[in-house]
Length: 152
Image 1 (tube, one colour):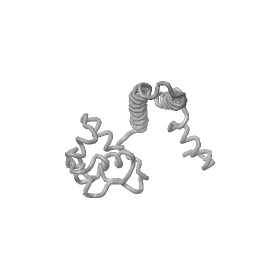
Image 2 (cartoon, helix red, strand yellow):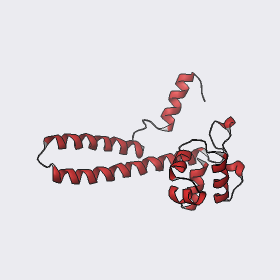
Image 3 (spheres, helix red, strand yellow):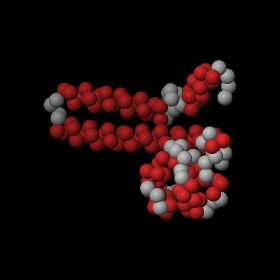
Image 4 (cartoon, rainbow, N blue to C red):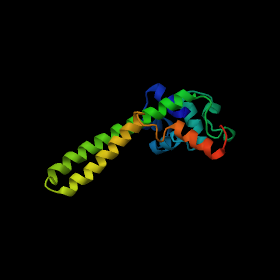
């Protein structure tokens, strides 16, 4: 999460950061999704961000939770990520709906397919904008605590 926080603070895209660090954009995506970077990648990112290597390097004892990113920041970043994914999905849905409605306007299967996708879009929007708490961090925490039989 610290990589995402530092990148967003500087207003950089994942591609821009990847280019500056000499890695692929996919590497940055993986790191931001929680995958541990190699020591070489950590050094490159620390150099780009002009921070100490210890700030970037993952610590196994912390179970991939970065102390430099506060809980409320993590929740805010997750919220923004979900909203961004919703808008991306909505844009793809609109473009495909327009293209296919021109091509297959007289096909009933088209309307059934895009009706189903429209329902999926609505559900994703409700989750993204936190109108429905399903799959939220709080929901996950409750399930973990239920499975453990104790508080985290």
